[in-house]
Length: 369
Ligand code: PEP
Ligand code: MN
Image (cartoon, rainbow, N blue to C red; front, side):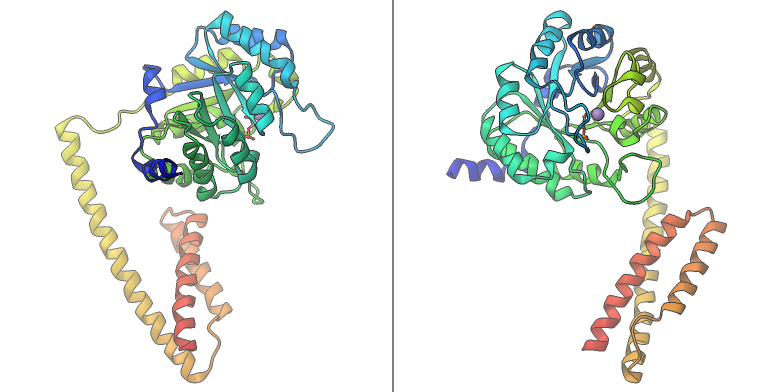
């Protein structure tokens, strides 16, 4: 138990990147392959088309978490030898999703190289722990997809469970978050969440899954480029020789030749400015940004003082904190003004709702005090 505690303490400092460094790639890591392993023929066909591309890892779902019963739920254990054939015939590493300890054992028995935890499993600490117990101490690579809900702690918790059980080769996959809001995405990317994860564990490789974020083929290039611009370490892209006929996720899978095109067109940015002239230009801009941030903070603090004076007046006259008409008036005014200045409605609403919430909290304290 003692060594487990020691290990846990070190998670922030751990170098999670070794497995990726050992691959010695001169491009972002690419994981490609069909959503589901449908037949041996289909699996091998895609794998051979991916053989001489940037794809290092071949993915295929064998146990499929489907929203409704009665749809194709995967070929199960029968498909694992097909993946062994992929490895033998193409040299690619293989990856499958595991959702319980039984899957984990079978994937290990059939020597699958990479085990990934699906979004619907990451949300369930019992399932994650069961899998972590089953594979404890493994040197296989374990990739943890984000949970379906935008909960960074739940994502971290799942990663911790594997780390605690002595799994050393770990990475994360960002596949977007489910939302009740209507959106162009199947799963909203909420980029700040994987960025926060990267800031907490700087060496943890993070792979973007544009297929499950977009839910269509058209958006894949753009989301992939954003991921590379944000310094993601790789991409997981669903690839099928005949996407329209795919047994699951037909709308979002792309053909291997489109994958090659996308990889060619994507720009990998340098991690930082190199030329001295660009560095000093950047520093000058950063100085200006810092000054603007100071001004913003001062203005916010001054605004809050006025809010507090209003709070005192409300207390004296025993008037309710929330004045909805006034708030609607403010919101409309700032959204219109923001629009004139090229600031989007969503952005302005988000900021002013946060300001309003904080103002209410301050006035509540005064009125109750
Ligand atoms: C998949 O990768 O096919 C899959 C089911 O993904 P997710 O867990 O992200 O929904
Ligand atoms: Mn899929």
